[in-house]
Image (cartoon, rainbow, N blue to C red; front, top):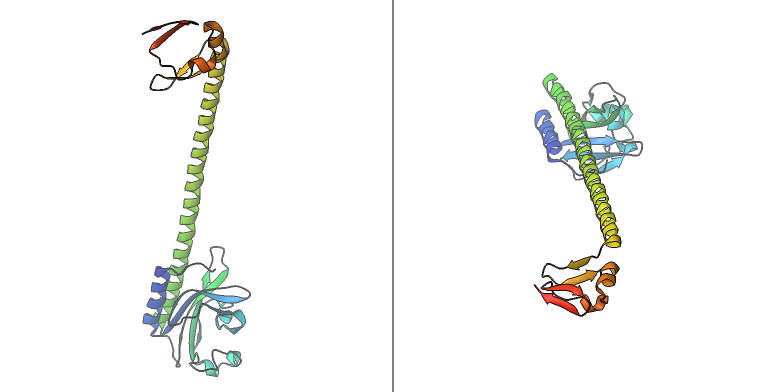
Length: 229
C-alpha cells in the first residue's frame, strides 16, 4: 500500500469503465483500517475508511458482488456513499487474490444510476482482475530479481576489495622486508629523490634531509663523493 500509481493499472481501470459503461472504477487494497486506491478512474479520492467502503462486502465473496440498485439493499442502509449527493447507485466488485489465496483488495466499478452487468461484462471483470494480479506479481518478481542482481554485484565488489587489500598488504610486507634488509632509495617519476631508508643512510653516510629532492642524474658513492651519470 501507499505505492505510486502505475499507468498500466490506470489503463486497466479505464478499460473496465469502458467495458462496463461506468464512470468510476477503482483498483484498491484493503486492510483492517482503510481501502487505498492503487489505480482509479473517475475520482480524485485516495482512500476511504474500511467501514465506509462497499468493497468490504466483496472480500467475503468468491465471485463478483453486484448491487444493481444500492437503494434496495438493506446492507447498505447506513453507507454514507449510498445516501448522499452523487450517491453510488450501482456497484460491481471482484476480489484480488494474492499468490497464497488471500483476498487483499478489489477491482470495483460504480455508477450514479442503477445498472446490471451482462455475462460478457462480468467475464471481462474477472479477466481484468487476473491481469491486475499478474502485473503485481510480475513486478514483485522483477524487484526480487533486481535485489538478487544487486546482491551479486555487491558480493563481487566486496570480493575485489578484499583481494585488493590482500595484494596491498602483500606489497607492504614485501616492501618492509626489502627496506629492512637493503639500502632503498625512492624516486618520483621525474627522477627526484622522495625517500630513503636507514640502511641507505648508514651505508652511504648521508642524512635524509641531504638527499631529499636530489635528482637521479647523480650516482651516489660515499658521503662527499658522487658523480653525474
